[in-house]
Structures are given as structure tokens and as C-alpha cells.
Image (cartoon, rainbow, N blue to C red; front, side, top):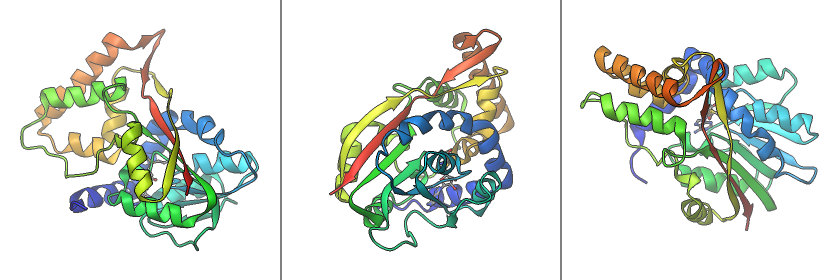
Amino acid sequence: MASYEGFADLERDGWSDDQISANYVGMFSSASDLAIPAILSEIKEPARVLDLCCGQGNVTEALLHAGFQAIGADFSATMLAHARERLPRGEFVEADAQDLPFEDATFDAVTCSFGLMHVPDQPQALREIRRVLGPEGRFIMTSWCGPDVSPAFQVFYGSVQEHSHASVKMPDSPDFHQYADASMAMSLLAEAGLQLETQRQVDCYWRLETPQALAEIFNKGAPRGGYLLTQQPEANRIAIKEAVTAKVQESFADGNRWRVPIPASLVVAKAI
Ligand SMILES: C[S@@+](CC[C@H](N)C(=O)[O-])C[C@H]1O[C@@H](n2cnc3c(N)ncnc32)[C@H](O)[C@@H]1O
């Protein structure tokens, strides 16, 4: 595996930061919540489910309400504090996806809602997911589609490209959008003993009260977006935010709000 040390630090520091975590929950996650019905629709039998990278526990909560036996796991104590506040009687474990503290074949299903793309060693995380799944166990994950189809990422990456200072570089990381490509997802999953069953798009979006809000979601509610903006000299940061705002104003007005689509990719795989 390439060395993703800088990326690993950025993710670990970001998700343990009180402000970024609170802003993810308060600002970003209204879009991730919209994928929950699609995730749940893929778990049909009464099942023991691990909700990996559970964050604030939105999917864990939905699983419990639907009658499944669910446990949430995340490496961030800060995000888990949000989950425990939301579900005081829920079961949550602090754990890294690359080294899960569960016996082999403990679960009938593993969900991972917008989590795997934040993990540095994804082949290892997928092997861990496969290991804790029982025979015929199912893995259901979501990630964000890339700028080829995602208006939100077109606007954000496009504005960064136009106005970023040449000195600002993201640390090397796995492709953030690779699970939106079915053939890429199939081969990554296959290496871990998981067979792709379905990959499809799920419509998620933000309904924003101001056109400025999109830049703030990326700036304050996500470690990578925040890094790309906070590393900029002030003039570049302002120019990026203004460009994002202008694009939102131009293309996404919806009554007295702004509706920005951020489509997700749902991937379902079976343990083989
Ligand atoms: C984008 S949030 C998703 C939260 C929630 N599942 C949702 O759908 O909104 C990503 C979550 O993955 C967690 N995470 C990132 N890397 C992880 C790792 N290596 N092991 C466990 N959790 C990780 C973060 O702490 C964060 O809570």
C-alpha cells in the first residue's frame, strides 16, 4: 500500500476535533441521512448488524428502530459522544476499521455509511469486514459520487481548482470516489472475499438557507474540505468561498432556499 500517513493523521485529527465533529453532525449529515432508507432496504432478515464508522449513530439508530440487533463502531471518541447522546441505550465501541475487536463471523451484515473512503488502508478494512461477517453475510456501504455526476463536488472541486494557491496540496490518499465506479468497487471487494451484488446511485442533497452555506459545510464540517480551505492564504480562501457561493446562486435556487444535489453510491456485497 502507498504511504498514506499524512492522510491518516488528517482523518484522525479531524474526526477527533470537537468543532469539525459537531459541524459534521449539524451541517453535513442532513445529506448522509437521506441514504439511510436505501441502506436499510438491503437488510432483509432479522440480523446482527455492525454499523462501522457509525459516527453520530444515525444509521445505528435507524437499524435499532427497524428491529435489528445493531452495534456501532467508530475510531473517534468525539463522534461516539454524539452517538451516545443520541442513543443513550445504544451499544457503541471505539474501534479502528482496520483492526476490529470482534470474533470471526460475529455479524450477519455490516453497514458503513460514508465511512470507508476515510480509511487509509481500505484493503485491510475490507478484509476485517469480511472476517467478522458470517457465511452469506452482507456488506452495505455508501460513499459520495465524484464530480463527474455530483453537482456538489463539481462546484467545490471546480472552485478550488480555479482559485487554490499552488502551494496547497492534499496528502496522498486513496481515491475518495472509487466506490462509485462499479468495476473498481467490484475488484476492491473481490480481493477481500466479497462479491459485488449491486451498485446504484441514491439521491441525496442539501436544502440550504443561504447560498454561502455550501462553502461552510465543506470548510467546517469535513476534515478534507476544511484542510483544503484552511491551508489557503486568506485571499485564495475568500476567492474559493465566493466562487462556490456564486455557483450555488446561479444554479441551485429552489424557492427561498438552495437545493444542492450530492448523489451517493450504494454498494452491496455478499461474503463468499
Ligand atoms: C463522514 S462520517 C460518517 C458518519 C455516519 N456514518 C453518517 O452516515 O453520517 C465518517 C465517520 O467515519 C469515522 N472513521 C474514519 N476513519 C475511521 C477508521 N479508520 N476507523 C473507524 N472509524 C473511522 C469517523 O470518525 C466518522 O465518524
